[in-house]
Structures are given as C-alpha cells and as structure tokens.
Image (tube, rainbow, N blue to C red; front, side, top):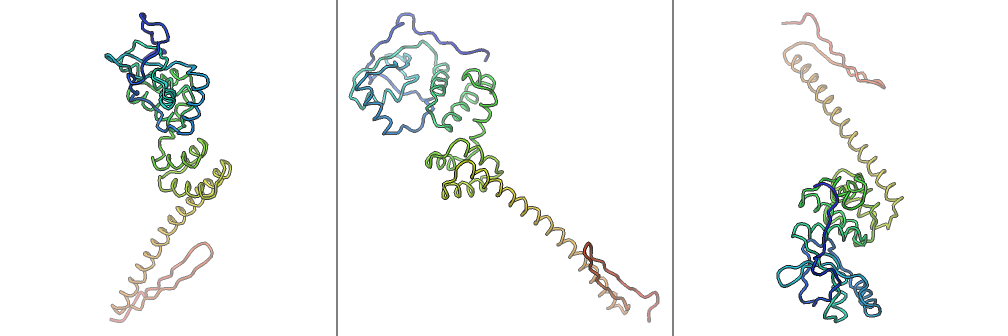
Length: 272
C-alpha cells in the first residue's frame, strides 16, 4: 500500500447532517478499550453547555450508519439524552473505514499507549501495511512505531497492572529489558509496591539484571565444580580398585590457590 489514504465525502451530502443516534452503530475496529465514566460525564457536561463542536464521522451501511470516529462524543451525547448528533458522512468501503477509524483515533492522542500500540498492530497485521507505511499514515517516525509495537511483548496481565496503577510508557519500556515474563512480573510487583518513579525503576532493573547474571555465573561455576568432583571420584575409585587387586597404590591431594593437584603413586613391582 503506497502513499497516504485519502477519503472522499459523499458528493450528494458534503455537509454536516444531524443523524438519529439510534441509527448509528459502533465501529468494530475502535481501538479504545476503556471509556472512563468520569471523563464521559465531563464531556457530557461540556456538550450540554456548548454542543458538539466536532461532528462525528460515519459511513452508510444500508439504511443505517456505522461510526468511523467519535465514539466518546456519541456516548456523551447519549448521557445528555440527545436524540441526534451532527455527523459527516464518508463514502468508503469496509477496509478503508476500519483503517480511517484506527488512524483518526491514534492521531487524537487520547488513547493509552497500549491501546495505541494495539491499533498500530492492527494496521499492520489486518490490513497488510509495513511498519514504514503505518508510520507514514500516522505521521510518525518508523522507529517510534517499532518502539510502540514492542510494548505488546508485555503480557495482558502486566499491561492491565501498568494502566491500573498509572505507570508510564517509560516504565513499560524499561520492563522490556528483562528477558522473561516471570522476571517482568517480579519486578513490576516491586515497582507497584514501592511506588517507584522511572529513574528508580531503571535502577531496580539494572540491579536485578546484575543479580541474575551473577546467579547464572554461579550456576556455570557449579557445573564445573561438579565435573571436577566427578573426576576426583574417578581417581579415588581407580586407586581403590588397584588396592583391592593387591597393588599398593595411593593418592595425595595437594591444593594451592590456583589449582588442585592429585598425585597417584603406583609401584612398578608388586607382590603376586
């Protein structure tokens, strides 16, 4: 898909029209998941005082309309008890309607960073865009889009906790430095429990990674020690086998700072 998508309004309309609310259905590609009741009430109060200043975007679907963008305004209007809302009708197909809904909602910048990342992922996975094409649609740098998508590596539970406790996108991106879901959950619990800011979170993660690295190094050394012990046991068993056969063999362990030395003495001649 090359270039920026362009959408034409129905030539026969070309104006803002008041449409019955009960004839407007939501858009299935709406990227917003959470609609805070307090925000909707505040928006409803504003609409009561000033009206709807920005018309909703819709498209015709038979004798009804499908919302492209403006679901918060639609919900707030319902709270106000309005029967109709001002709309602009666009003449576009299903695919372009979904893309426009995603793009417009992302560009409004009032989504959570996880909702924004999910919406960008939909543009790429459902509509065959590359990261570069999605970035062009949104007016963002390709590296910004890539960083947004990385946020989706966090589990659903971790994302919910981050949003619920008001942590920032920088908190979320710092957690991605940890390699496993288990480690991220452990550190996220500490961040929430101690109410850590971004700077302290990054320090905690650096310390945690260092501690995990030390543990891995210890495990590696432990395997070496286990192998050395196995070799020593092999030597001891060999000496014991010779002794059982009547050979006066013996061994001596000499340990220095840098190594362990084993001396095994086997007589050249032995009694039969």
